Length: 135
Image (tube, rainbow, N blue to C red):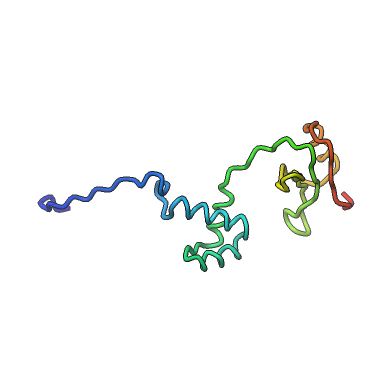
């Protein structure tokens, strides 16, 4: 460092534009999260190439995973279905709010005992929609 130089460099944080130590603006981060939620990893990666903000599929998935998990809400009408945690091997149960079509809660398995226990803790449920699957 040359102390005789008259030029001084000063930098201050861009408050409201970008988070600390980020290389992208908050607006771009929200856009990438929306793409990750809508398209997922590989398709989202291809889309970001078209909007000149290319990031890897891992980055998109990491942004989605970092989102806060909302608290299960009270809903009177739920849909119950199974979903694959590991296709062909491990299945769980998903509860969906039928008014908004958004997931309410996820269970680790699809046994009737687990579903009955979950429903005991949610007495506000009045109507249950389910598929005709065996479990």
